Length: 343
Image (cartoon, rainbow, N blue to C red):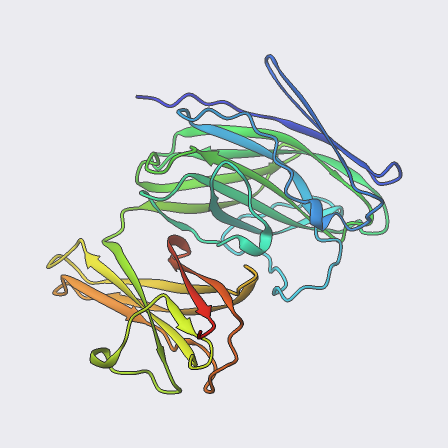
């Protein structure tokens, strides 16, 4: 069956003098107006994830999301670099395209710090694929400027999947700005396999393009086991698995991630695996990156890291902790463990 496209076009007006942001979405009988008081804040970065949506649980949907601005905020992120895979045409002296990035979400957008950028999405988990387009404002502190922006999405066979039109209103005090749009479904499993293309047009001039893939994965994550150890990781035969650990004796907490090989005796597989740790207050503690290698002859395998913690016990705070497991920047599992006080 052919999915029905429903588009939402966003036109927005940013007015810091009145301390208000207004987003208008109109499509057929849909007339939705959202107003958010910014309370005099000059830094719009915290309000970048305004989502105007008109969704159907069963149909393919495109989403127009309002632009956001970094406004020269100092962060730990690496500076954006001009993309090399796109053919960029001259656009005057008002803006410069710096990067196009993709990430996956449900119907609601996520904070920038929580986005996992990738160009490879697993069919069984992909819902909405978001295209984030980043710009440098070459008219910074000089003038405001407005532009029409068009995103064209192409299928693996080269046919046009659809397009999303919108408007960018760039304030003069924005050093950088970005625009986001998304295409997909509320539920996973609907994307056909293959390589897709997104083209970006500003004022009807193509300024860039980038591809992403929807692929099958050759594994199933079956379970995640936690165990405690000291400065050196214990041998597997000596590990004691648990989800609750006493504070006075806990040093490093490690994990075994177990996989079933769906391509057994077919081919080797290599993926990037990331463990994202959250503390007892659900705040991000850190990320551990590594390689996941699944040999063709292995029917089952497991993967461990160096653990998280201290060489001396007693330093973990009491509470519930979270571990997220990503493979190729696709979320595969979320598990929890607790640090408790010995009675």
